Image (cartoon, rainbow, N blue to C red; front, side, top):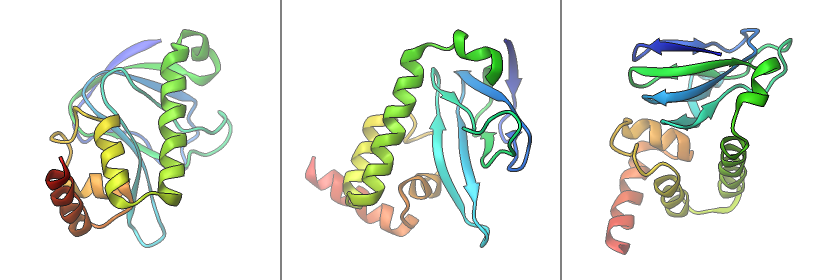
Amino acid sequence: MKTIAIPKGSRLQNKGDINSKVYMVDSGLLRAYSIDEKGKEHIFLFAPEGWIVADNVDSETPCELYIDALEDATVSVFSKDTGQDRLDSNQILRRLGVLQKRVIMLMSATALERYQHFVETYPKITQRVPQRMIASYLGITPEALSKVKSEWVSNR
């Protein structure tokens, strides 16, 4: 394991990289995302302090995700091959639980329900990321996000 400082805007991983790294965020904020054939970004995961982020491919398969720093960050870097015993199983289970819930919600929940889940999952980052990124994560347009946020505020 090594700890590295990542400046805001730096990319840790590109799609197609052969990468066997797991990143545990000590400070700052990372995101993992894909870019479709039309050039549109689709945010897969935000990783604030205490979260882990990695591409779920084996060490010989090209990565599917981009990972970059949305803020200056300090991360602990593990090799997938040797780092699993160093990671807290609660962190891994939390990540899997969030991703499972997200997939189910993308299949069946309203935009308002997805936004409520986002706020519950990431309570401290709603002001740290641009609204277009939150919209991308939710699978809606920024305009739809504005409407959802207005509805959410009026329901509280």
